[in-house]
Length: 127
Image (cartoon, rainbow, N blue to C red; front, side):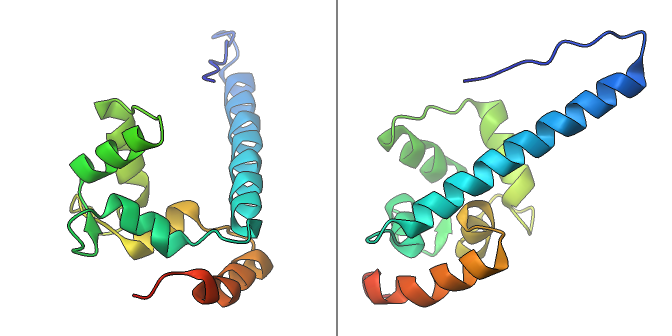
């Protein structure tokens, strides 16, 4: 669900503070979802990456990302894909590697990330 913030343009400082608060709230929600996902016993981030990397090149193109999202019932528009790639494509070359995918979908919490990395290899399919 998209939510737009409404601001009183006469006070830009308040607007900035509200944007900051919303950013923090959204970031907390995303991190909670990442943690929950990584606690699912049969979840494997590498296997999820492979569902997008249909040609098994170790890289997800923008087209593969868009097509993969559609498989999960998400239809991002061009602007949303651009913003996502801009945020997570570390090399800014339009190629989404596993390290980028991990940055996007692995929890930032060190303990949780360590747990995910140590528990997942037992459950992932062979590389």
